[in-house]
Image (cartoon, rainbow, N blue to C red; front, side):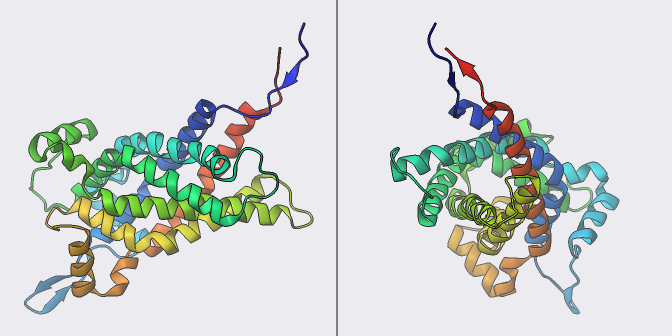
Length: 305
């Protein structure tokens, strides 16, 4: 009989499934915050005879309460089906490919800590590649989340995620499913770099501090750090992406950027910052905690011939 050898690494298929499951679980837990964030980002100033009308949505808790009161509690989970589609594809690919791409960049013979810029480059590449595949799911998710801002009595455009895919393709063409791909690539590549590279780096830094171990507390701190960096860096692109996907009146990315800046000022690009950080921070904590635990199931030392 051949010598028994330890299985030291999990396969790409296993890491993809781990990543997809962790991303989907985090999405389900935090989508009410994401719905609030999208509503705040899509909210524009409205002029009336006396000046500007007060905004309908105010703050994270206020937005969540308003949506629940006016549309029902289930409205906070609008777009969850498309959100899970997105996270399965996007989350599985961007996280699953991150390790292999890092290895490709530094070489399989590399020994030691991978430089931060290599981590950032790997995350930029995997984030861009993953969202090219997953953009239709992101578009449908935003469209469904935006439905609630329609006036009372106005018929809804879509009955669900599947109907949205079909209706958009039939009415706007197949290419419409990739609406907002430009800012979405930029947003997701940058945010992915902020999340994965910062989580990687923060975790590595924490583990060098005496007394800290590779445990849940370390994963929680690293996840919060990843969420904070992601929101600070990605909020302007995120606002433009949400507006382009939720409102077809914009001609292109630059048109959306200029109109938003001209009509509402620079800080409009940080609309929904608090719910965005609350959502991204909690999303990253849940996702990375889940991912680390699920990976341990596959990474336990197993022996084979």
